[in-house]
Image (cartoon, rainbow, N blue to C red):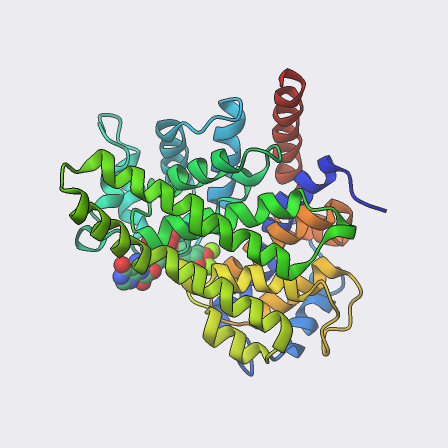
Length: 370
Ligand code: R7I
Ligand code: MG
Ligand code: MG
């Protein structure tokens, strides 16, 4: 039975939370045996509800802390993305619980954007890394709520993903990674189960990254410079080379992997398992697409569970890759695919469901006004 759209909204935000909570312990210890060793991950998952059995025993990290801010800000502003409001929420959340495992550099930004007299909330992010901005995956890890909207709103998804990421990640790789992740969530949400074709899914995202995201760059360049047309084109070309093309390359590799089915080790080394956006977003998406089919060594029939186990087994930035994969998978399979005991064990699932419901109400209201 196909999940309802409401269930998919819930599945997306809950999938992100459980990926974060279950992936987090492995970010600290690493996966024993390295990428592709499923056993330690499956052992841990099998302990859930048995040895690991206290309510909310598995704590969420910065990924969820910030995703909750994005969701809450969208809810408070009836679906619109208000940078100042979101910045305040990020800053407050960080002040309230600074020990959620935030990235080493983003901390400075979070301290600055919360200051009351701040004029430009995007400014602190721009100063990171000597002015080049962070390409960490922090923009992508929290972006899932942005993808929860109507099918036709692709342009809005891109714009909101970008804006939400720019508050902390002004590097093109950082915010374009967030755009790709938001688009993947949005596409998973609106793909019928009987029409799911992983290769087409990838091609669709490739097309969007190539056309729409480049357009955004061109407009941005035009509005910011008074240079000659030629130098403008050079700049646009350079921008393509640097960022969008990396994501298009990742999508190309990903598509060939769907056919060749390489070892998880190869997946981790080509698509990446790091805290940089361009070395993690592709792996999360691949985890979802690969796990539509059975994976030898991961016996579960539950495809969301399979996706999360697979994503964690890529090792490295396990909480974030599993959280991003979980968000995409949850948007596709719906909340009923999340094992019930996980909802109690993972801190923050109930808030995720409440926020998903509120985002769903906004979606319904917008639809009725169309
Ligand atoms: O991106 P960010 O919010 O970190 C997210 C990650 C997730 O895995 C979370 O689960 C948490 O563990 O952290 O935080 P940033 O501090 O902006 O970026 C993270 C790290 O990426 C930085 O501390 C750097 O090590 C690296 N990094 C860069 N290194 C060199 N040059 C990011 N941008 C650059 C860069 O431009
Ligand atoms: Mg984290
Ligand atoms: Mg992480």
